[in-house]
Image (cartoon, rainbow, N blue to C red; front, side):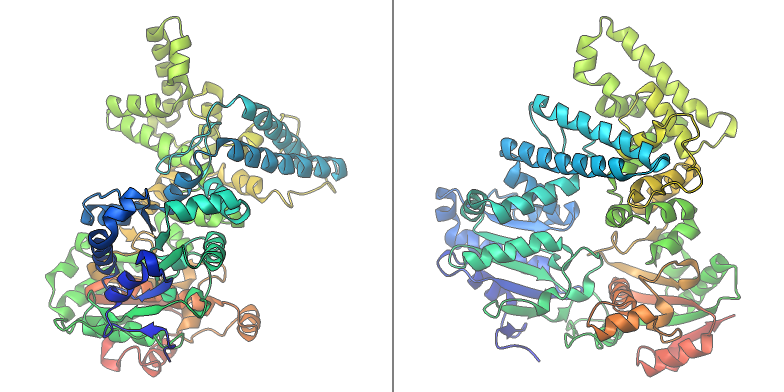
Amino acid sequence: MMSANTTTDIESADDIIFNSIQPQALKSFFLFAGAGSGKTRSLVNALKRFREAFGIDYRLQHRRIAVITYTKAASNVVKERMEFDPLVFVSTIHSFCWELIQHFQHDIRKWRIAELQVEIDTLEAQIVNGRAGRTLEDRKIKLEKAKQRLEQLPNIKKIVYNPNGDNRTRDSLSHSHVIKIATDFIRDQPLMQQILINKFPIIIIDEAQDTRKELIEVLFALQSKYKESFALGLFGDTMQRIYLDGKENLGNTLPEDWLKPEKTTNYRCPVRIITLINQIRSKVDTHQQCPAENATTGFARLFIVDNANKDKTKAEAEISSMMKDLAGDEGWQDDKLIKKLILEHHMAASRLGFKELYEALNGPESYRTGLLDGTLPSIQVFTKLVAPLVLAHQHNDAYEVMRLLKKHSPLMDRTAMMASENQIDSIGIVHDKVKNLLSLWQEGSEPSVKQVAEVLKAEGLFLIPDVINVILSRKESGEDEDASGTETNTGDDEITAWETALQRPFAEIIHYKLYVEESSGFGTHQGVKGLEFPRVMVILDDENARGNLFKYERLFGVEELSDRDLANQKEGKETSLDRTRRLLYVACSRAEQSLAIVAYTSRPEVLSKNAIDFKWFESSEIHLIN
């Protein structure tokens, strides 16, 4: 049931948003905006009305509305629709945080010093209490690197950050650092709180369910403290939370005095697909969508493939052909016109040729989000620099090779070139170093990631991440293997992960890069967030998946819940069932015209029966593929 503060499209959500952001009567709100509900249009409408009514006064007071979007693409859409009006500061969360903290150079430096000192103290204690072996030597290398960074901090003139860059230089902050620093400053510094509410009395956050929970929580605390002068507006749908570092049950844990408008019309999907996604989420909450007045009937089919069928590419091609006939749509015959979604990343890694690389780097919890969306700092030297350089060379694009070097190589930065007595000779030396790197691929050779990293370190072409430097800096005295009975790498999971990843062929880096950049022919649930496609094929395959985060056969009732799931269910905690249901919901709700769900299983008849019992599909909509 809706609460007393909940409203629907009947009581215009657009009006409620506008009324909530009136400067003399600020009111915080959470707008439930399901798939395809037109939330961007509602946001822009409210902002334009605000500009007309209060824009002059806000400009005179040097105040702005902050709109935080999940992606740069979404940010650009809002900016364009607002005619790039500076009254509205539109940015991603990282850009917003940097906007807040960038002028607090002294405080940022103190924060980094404190963080490094904690790291140094921890490493020194581990070394004192450690036993001889590889782990001890690794920690000594890490300690030396941490002390070097601490010594260098006072000499850094200005700490910098680029929201769209890789931030690998010693004077730059990482993406995660910017979020952590902003969170700490807002929580702990009254001056920062006053600056924030005076500069941005209204903050609107899109896709709030996936915004880092620590930041959301400090903004909640700030709003509670300054209710009369600061308002939060959250746009989102808890059913579309896809990152594990978002705040769980966001829509159900709001303060009582918050407004909770809803946009219940789905303007994207046809009737059949809206019916399906409503059924998928019906076990979770009471939010249900209705189709637009001009919605078409649409088309959805479930194809169940026996796991005994090992030629999955052939099976999926057959399904595309069947969809062409069933839906009467020739577009299903052209792979370029079909959006294929593989929603479990291990399954994608298995299919696309980077399984071992993915398994290694998915181990550390601190790596998981960055690995999934391509922002993991320690891999970007390979994905953003080496891979593009190699591909440019293979395409005889000398201009692109030089552009990459001038922009990213410390050998060609302004300071290095100004210090050179003969810049032409210096450029020639850099070219020789590049040749040494590219020689790893001569005559069809395929180097390992470690071989590439070793050349980068030896030639100084690009900066090597510290975690990789630790491994490359080991002495050649048998330290690559622990002696019997010595300490293992427990507690150094990032080093352990890269030890394995460095042994993989560099081709796996290329395959991973294509996947996260949506160039592999398969989509990720991160990459399709907020997007829509006429024809969608969702591929569910637990056989190629790994771990217990997502399990489609459990969702379809083919496999029993694990003991952990049962325990979590009893304690009211999230289960693999919850996570999997959300991913399926997000994937299916991308379809504008027709949808094919391809489910691989060892028990086709059970899956078919349950899909009917769940009221997800009629028997006539289910096709068994042998």
